[in-house]
Image (cartoon, rainbow, N blue to C red; front, side):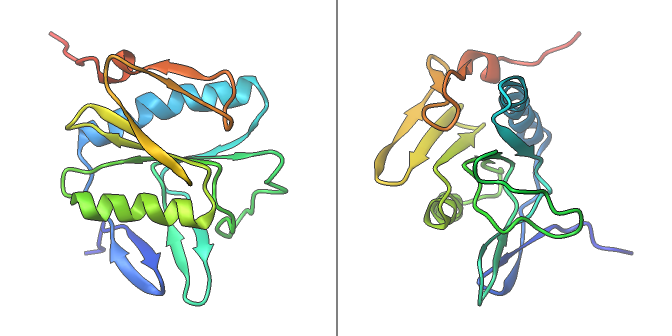
Length: 171
């Protein structure tokens, strides 16, 4: 039986990705969909879903798959039909899985920033927070009472975290 395990390549070594819960997928989509719509409506660049791989280091290679990524038109010449992207996204959304340790999650955020990603939105569904990470700037943790801003990467984008963290209950 084929394995359903997903992997990333970290400095030449295969590393299994943690299993994601339904909540993980739901929260990632509920944040990434408005971002993608904003990017499309404002013709800012291209967005990439969670299975997209980005080569962020070579020799040894590091190939990561963010929960969501955005790359501006000014930095993206073309989208390869068969290969991975050899560029760090401008914006990455990473959602902490129930099985991710804090240290593992922090390391992944750090890898993106060291590769040149301008902003990482670290979404923690269990804590109901998003921490905004940028190189050289103290991380800012936002809660359900706050509004997320696109800053310099997505000027004009705002999103109430109340929308993200509302309870989904159907009878």
